[in-house]
Structure formats: C-alpha cells, structure tokens
Image 1 (spheres, one colour):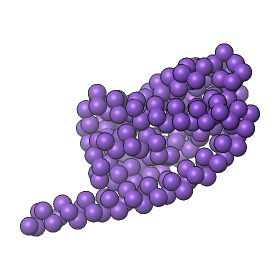
Image 2: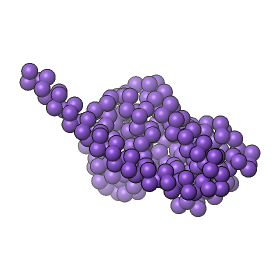
Image 3: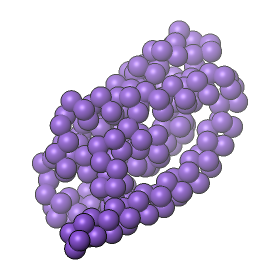
Image 4: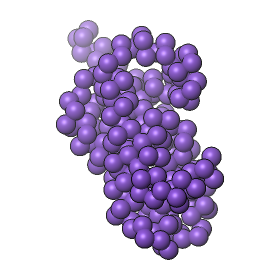
Length: 206
C-alpha cells in the first residue's frame, strides 16, 4: 500500500495527493499519514510546495467528506447499517461499529465535533456520516470540515518537510501515537455519550 501511494504522489504531484486524500476519506484504512508526510518530504527537493500540498490535500478531504455526508443525508439509518454489514462495507473496509462510534461522538458534542474529529484517525472520515444523518447544514459542515482538515494537513505535511528523508520514521511514530490517541478519544466519546444520555433522561423524568 505504501509503495503504491508514494508512486502515485511522485508521479502525479498535487493531483495525486488530492485524489488519494479524497479516496482516503471514503476508505478510512488508507493511511493519510503516509500521503501527507511523503508529500511534505517531496517539497524538499521537487517543485511541490508545502502550501500547494496542503491545499490539494484539503480539497481532497472536503470532496471525500461530501460523499459520506451525502450518504448520511440520503440513506436511512437502517439502510446504511445493512449496507455496512454487507458487501459494500467489506469493499469500503468500513465497520458498522466505527460508524456507531462516530455517531455517539456527534450525539455527545453536536456539530462542533465535525471540526474536532477531523484530527482523529478513522473518526476524521466517518464523522461526516452522522453529520449528514442529523441534517447539519451544508455551509457550516463544509467550513468545519475545511478548518479541521487544514489543521491535520498542515501538521503532517510540516512534519514530512522537517523530517526530510526520515519521513517514514515520522509516519511510523505518528501511526503508533494515533492508535493510542484513537483509543482514548473513542473511550472519551463513549463516556460523553453515556453522560449526555443520562442527563437527557434526568431532564425528562424531572
């Protein structure tokens, strides 16, 4: 996978970055860390520039997010769950449980979670689905998605540019950190959702 990603980025430059990041937002298992840190590394010896790589990646992030947002708006929850449990879920490498976690986070934090989750692996893509299901207005969704994606992209492209030829080591280290961060954030989201549910029930019975 890493070899294919670096080959496409090396060959197609900004266009390759935009396409790969758009696909990565729809297929979360594709590692954005590799795309972005390698893109940052390329800025140290090619005509690519950090602002250009960040802009391309951000555009790809928004395009991919719109696809999942549209799925959330157009598909009933039962239909979406059935698709994720079936062949579509297997092809896209999407787990129903991951979408449920994103939904719990959105339920607990509302539309601002679109921004926060753009910096959380896996959830950064899937948060678009509950945002669409909740009927979040398109304009704030796009603004929050762009802002969160921009922060994530600047961080990783910057790390790749600073690391230079050692970009691979940065990717490996960041992936390990991301795994731990994801586990903690998912736990925090589940706890927040539980507290929100209990609070809501308390208001209803009070």
